[in-house]
Image (cartoon, rainbow, N blue to C red):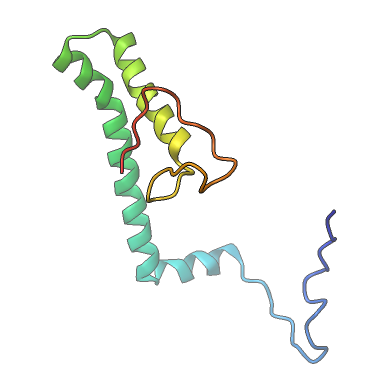
Length: 114
């Protein structure tokens, strides 16, 4: 059911010159001079920092605000996450019976958040 991938350069014309591979030092030097690399690195760092901060604080917030146990807070958080993952393959307009095939039926009590 699969086709073996041909070796690199197999389909290139015969007159094509082979380029020498850059070493690690040259590659790092090239990346350091690109502003796009630094912007993407900063964006990924901020997103990770905020994501970990929110996920660490979320259960404490629920426990302190609603005076529930840590177990109840975990159920609140995990149920919401499960519902979102379960409904993720649905089209943006919402689920319409008969319009989509092979999409699992949502669990009772889950509400799609748009």
